[in-house]
Image (cartoon, rainbow, N blue to C red; front, side):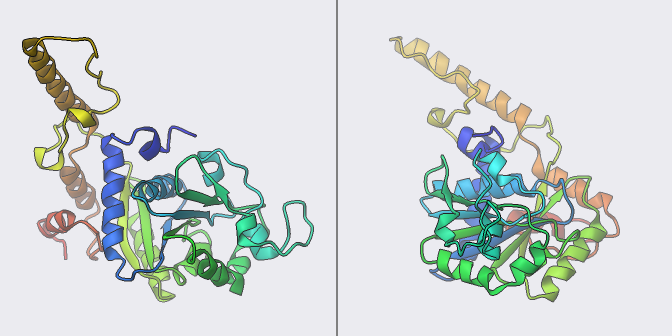
Length: 309
């Protein structure tokens, strides 16, 4: 398993906590008791949507939910590389009725789903790269796939292709309950974000939030109100207490030393996200349109910025 699946390889890291917060927000948005269907897409490539999708899926699985992650980017798939699985048979093989060897075969969805090293997380890879991904997604088999998978999974998470380059994700957005747009700090153009929003909403897609990815790390200390931890949840990079017997005075000294190390770790590794959000929006002075964000704290920040409507 690759190190980029940080919610699994380093579950105590601040980044993993961010994914758990995103997972919780999405869980509260699901008003029904049935399967939750989510699309993660971006405006263009290289904004980190596949990384977000994989870690979000792992965070859902860690909560005890049964997750199906579908790599719906049938042009440049990445999920099979992140989870180190084979890419065939997959979504394209199921939708087209052509197996990985190029022969006609009416595949069942469960012929294509693979288990992963993450408990309760299953992967439906993209399959062989087809010449007509959009046409395949428009077929009745896509809705049939969602309906069938909903019987056995609590969450179905689609990793879609960038929605401004091709129509694949726009099609999927009309079939799922929620769509998340991934943007990249100082990379995503605000006009592209507006265009993506219009395209998705035009087909009836429900955009529930925007993820701002690749925010630069600040050296400022992460505010205490965002940090809650004890020695039992010490980040993996901080040395653990030795197991040999020590007297109470030494033990107290070591505990204080660990607390200082934790503070240093937070100061070095965690961004001051409130200031970063403000700076990012202030740089895009033309931006006047309200974006739905899952965090109440983020909403308060946005309202406090001059020129924001």
